Amino acid sequence: MKIAISLDENKGLDSQASNIFGRCNYYLVFNVEDETFTIEENPAKSASGGAGIQAAQWIINQEAEAVVSGNLGPKAYDVLAAGKIAAYRHNGGTAQEIIKAYKEEKLECLLEPNVDAHSGLN
Image 1 (spheres, rainbow, N blue to C red):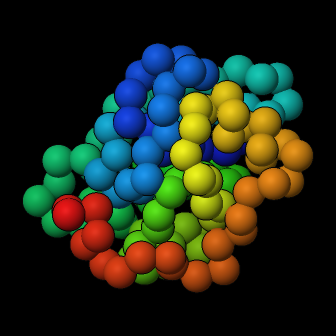
Image 2: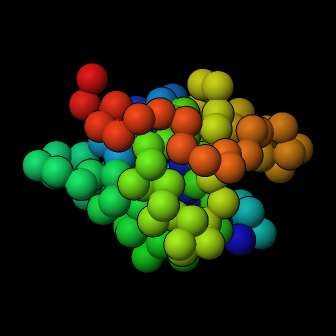
């Protein structure tokens, strides 16, 4: 199983998580079974529009089964839900802290978007 975490920076497991989903700088894609990961630049961060949708589709293409971010807008949420990707909210910290919280089932599961559209632009 893979989870994707939105990141502000690329410092391995010490990277700070991002509150922004669609326009974050990076995503960490973590394989829970073998504890391997990659950090990829967000291909949608500079999109002129639809960054959340494009980022959500990218997550689906990475075959992740869950995404963890600080905030998730309605369009991105809808794409992830259609792809059967579970969404969780973090309260800050490093990628390593978030992975630990995920494994311990301490993250809030998002059953709906938690911000309005275009909130990542602010």
